[in-house]
Image 1 (spheres, rainbow, N blue to C red):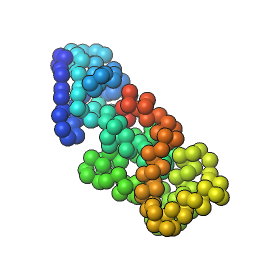
Image 2: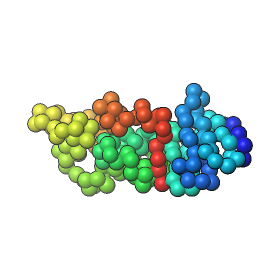
Image 3: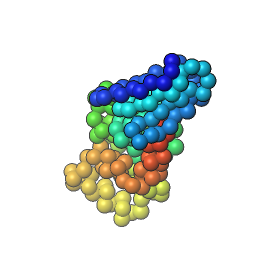
Image 4: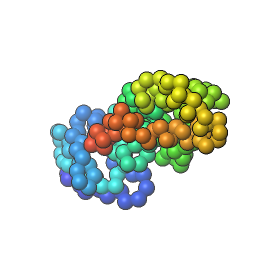
Amino acid sequence: GGNDSIDGKAGIDTAVYAAARIGYLLSKTATGFTVAASTGNEGTDSLSNIERTQFADFGVALDIDGNAGTTAKILGAVFGKTSVAIKEYVGIGLGLLDGGMSYPDLMQLAIDARIGANASHAAVVSLLYTNVVGVAPGSADLATFTGLLDSGAHTQASLGVFAAETSLNTASINLVGLAQTGLEFV
């Protein structure tokens, strides 16, 4: 209860709250976030270096510059921008990254889950291009990006990471907005 200042320091830290998310106001500050209870005597907590908040109904990942942002970018590139709002998908990505999986490994896992293991290079390029650019690739772009995979200049995972990191993808998934609100997960 009451007002608290919580600094998680290094690692993945979670601040846990007893009530449902709707009972709190989560706000971005210069040094992290505040979590203010709308009723009761919990008060307002100032969070710094806290990567996760857990409420009674779901969590909010706050590290958009870390694993939460990586998860959002992968979801946007592989499953489309609306998938960033699927709390279960976010939870899977966070769990794997927080557990030590690398960005490229999670990217490959996502591609395999979406279109199958050993998908053709053309299928991977079409998937990523369509989700990031918003339209299917033309024949010239398809040939260019497929050529990068065929030549070994890129793996499917590294091309996926490249696509996920583009400004087109980060704008499409509203990464800047997510830095203000956090990313909901279960």
